[in-house]
Every structure is written in structure tokens, then in C-alpha cells.
Amino acid sequence: MASLAEPGLTLTRLPHPAPLPAAQREALIADPGFGKVFTDHMVSIDWSEEKGWHRAVIGARQPIALDPAAAVLHYAQEIFEGLKAYRLNDGTMALFRPEENARRFNDSARRLAMPELPEDVFVDAVTQLALTDADWFPKVDGGSLYLRPFMFASEAFLGVRPAKRYKFLVIASPAGNYFKSGAPAVSIWVSRDYTRAAPGGTGAAKCGGNYAASLVPQAEAIERGHDQVVFLDAAEHRWIEELGGMNLFFVFDDGSIVTPPLSGTILPGITRNSLMTLAQESGLTIREERYGIDQWKADAESGRLVETFACGTAAVVTPVGKVASHDGEFTIGSGGPGQLTSKLREQLVAIQRGTGEDRHGWVKRLG
Ligand SMILES: *Cc1c(COP(=O)(O)O)cnc(C)c1O
Image (tube, rainbow, N blue to C red; front, side, top):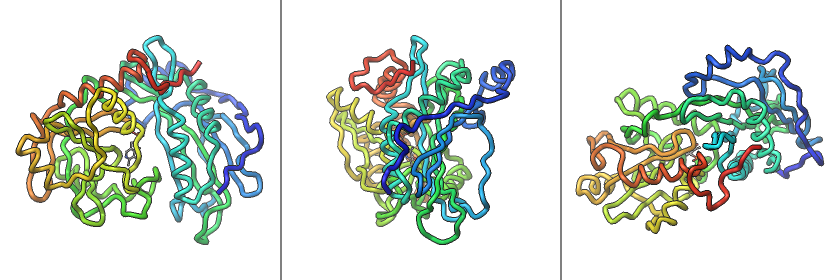
């Protein structure tokens, strides 16, 4: 669907008539956790077949009225993004590669037969919301303002076809430091019974439906005492793909790194892409190559594989310490964070915090 927007579409500001009193806000952001606390405002833009994108507003965050026949409630036509506003060490707020989120949002939109949103409108929406609710930025060390842009089919119609009406919204949620002192290694469970994405499916799109299908295997991992589930490919149940919401990297004893290729069943992470760039610039060899579950176990046991880590916006870089499946368990390296994992994490965090050199213009200062 073509991206159609009113010329000069800009956000109309309708400030919250009664924002949360400062004392209550301060109490909420003192220890916000993740995804539980929300700011005063939201962005809302409508799309219809006749008008394209219109009625762009930044106003009070409030419930949205939906017709019970709204297509999203029946056929899950929904996509989302996730990015963080950081505070640089000089106090300025900044976004990390937001235009990459805008581009990926439109890739997801095309796969779900939804209208594209002009990239500049997307970036402006997340920027304006972060600035409007800057007071909600948590003052805790390593805190951030997590921004959640999303779009869903709002047309009331039960036939199966792309909807003719959509809503794009952005909400913001203060987030604490995911890991207060470095990232602890996680234990992951290999799902043999469930897959996340099949060739030709929606694995490369950031859509809610992928997450709905991952909840049972994720719950299985938790029940068995692990933190996360790792998915294998749907065709051979052999090749390692990714975690429920993070991409994977494997580090070998010769210093080289392997990450599964973007075959259409893996979400093309912006953190993944950024870490690949940083690793290459450090002179490391990085291969996008399929890596099998049996090989992973054999290499961990022989010592050829020395580290494994997962990455994504929420937790940045997370070391994997232990892997378990129906065939037993194996430990990676010492079971704790590896050297290269820590180094790459520090490099990326330094750029995001403005203490490391931003050679690629990844950091977008807000104001
Ligand atoms: C969002 C997401 C990632 C990580 O992407 P980033 O752009 O690095 O945050 C990885 N896998 C899945 C399934 C995701 O939804």
C-alpha cells in the first residue's frame, strides 16, 4: 500500500489537561522496572483509504475506543517497534538509529499488508513524545525512556482482507537499568516442539502475532527453570535462529564470530547490525552463517566455542551461560559473561551514552 500522507502532516499538540502531579511521577520513576509505568502523553495518527494519514495528534495518553469488530481483534493485523531515548553523559536526550526503526516498521507494514508511514513522520513522532514527556525520564543510573510505536487495523469489518482503516500510536514507558551491575548470564531452553517462524511466514516482521505464538514455548522454558527459549528453524529443527526477542552471536576460540543469517525467519535486529559493524571495525571476522544445535553443543564441550550472547534494544547484550534441551545441558565457557561479549557491550553502551566516538552518526540528539 502506498504511503499516503497529507502534505505537511504535523502533530497537533493537545497537552494533557491534568498531567500526573510531580510528586507522584517522581515516586513512579524512582524504580520503574520495565513496561509497567507510562507517561502522560501519546501520539496518535489515523489512516483511511480516502484520506491517507491524517488527524495527527500528540495529546493525553488515554484508552482508545475500538469497535468490537475492529479487524486487529480478529486477524491480528498489528506491528510494532521498540526503541529507547537515552541520556548522554552531558544530559542531552538522544535516540539510537531511529531511522532504522522507521525503515523496519515499513518493512513490517508491507508484510502485514498495512500502509507505510513516511519515515520522517515516524521519527518526528518518537522525538516529539520523548521531548514532551522528558520529565518522565528516570533519574536512575542506566535508565531510559522506552518508546513503543505501533500500528493496528481499526476498521470494523469481519471479512478477511487488508483493513481500510488503521491507527498509528506511540506510547512511552520509563525503564530502569535492565541489569544493575553488568549483565548476568542467562540460561536458555531449546524448544524442540515449537518454532517461531517458518520460511515464507512473518518471522522477519515485528508483529504481535509472532510473540503470541512464542508464549507457550517461553512459558515452558520458565517452568523448566530457564530464562529464555531459543528457537530452531522450522524445516529441519536443526539450525539455531534466535531467542523470543533477541538475536544470537557465537564466539569461537580463534576470535571469530558467527551469527545466523537473515533468511527471512529472523528479526533483523538493529542491535545485531550495530554489533556486527563494531566487531568488523575492531578487525574481528564475523560470518553470517547457519549454525546447528548439535555443533553448538560439540563446540562448547570441545572448547572451540568460547562465548554466546543475545542482543536487542531492551537488554542490549546478554551473555548466555547455559543451554538445556531434552538431550541434556551444556555450559558455555565459564558459564559467565565472556570477554568479547563484555567488550562489545561496553563499546555499544559507550556510543549510546555519548562517551564513545559515534563514527556512524548513530546518535540523534534531541534538542
Ligand atoms: C525486536 C526484536 C529483536 C531485536 O531487535 P533490536 O532492533 O535489536 O531491538 C530480535 N528478535 C525479535 C524477535 C524482535 O522482536
